[in-house]
Amino acid sequence: MARIESDVAMVDARRARDAERLNSTSNMKEAQGLESELASLARRKSDLEDAELEVMERLEQADAAVAEQESVMAQTNAEGAALSAEAKRVVAEASAAFEAATRDRAAVAETVAGDLLAYYDRVSARSSGAALLRRGTCEGCRMVLAGTDLQAARLAAEDEVITCPECGCILVRTEESGL
Image (cartoon, rainbow, N blue to C red):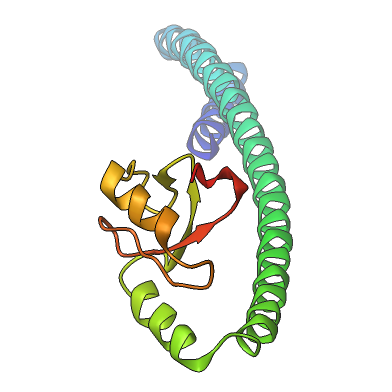
């Protein structure tokens, strides 16, 4: 754009100089040459002005595209900030829930016999540790216990620790166990 404007200014200056020379000349041949050059300069200026308009149009389109992209960026940044705030909130809630669960586990662990707690810690290192026995199915591995395993669970004392033969979880028996 600056180059085209500079070229237009040079054409205008040369046209003014040639027009002045045309007014002061008395030589017909020189006057015809200057008129021809003035016509050529007028065509050159017209071409430059057309090019200038084309560049201005492209510049406007580019400015519009930049404005659109800046809008998209602003929207993306706002969405990112909202998601970040939501993530921080979720992490804070999860941390609070984890701390509460840790406190609750510590309180329950104090009431459990030491050898049973040690056994649970060993089992939980490789599986979920303990699982509900529901309708003859271990909720830890989702396997249905065989009839002999269910019979052994039925015959076991209420305070006896029974485990899943598949995953090794301590099975918690309730009314839903199907025993």
